[in-house]
Amino acid sequence: LPVPQVEDPSELLNGSVTTHVLNTVTGQPAEGLALRLARLQGPELQWTELVQRVTDTDGRCQPLLAPGQATASTYKLHFETAPYWQRLGHSSLYPYVEVVFTITDPAQKLHVPLLISPYSYTTYRGS
Image (cartoon, rainbow, N blue to C red; front, top):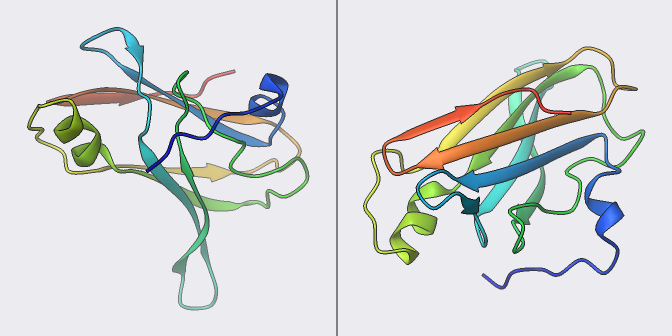
């Protein structure tokens, strides 16, 4: 997948839901990693995919939800880690990483970083 370039870097920080992926083996941003955001919704509580992105050279992507687009709900960030590691010549234990989180205050910005290596991952609430 081609890595998108953002003309205005401030666009990467102004969404209501953002992410950043870092490769902890190299200490560098994870460029070209595909991810998608889904929301749990409906009477049957099914995942509905909202957006797909690919990280840029800084391990970031366009906001996953624009300001005002979030609702109080449960969301899932799905990161395609296996193809990323394969491109770098590594095998990995985790073919993908899913981070499930709840938005209780849609007006509040949420940043969900992901730190990855072939055999571990960590996430936390960023700022």
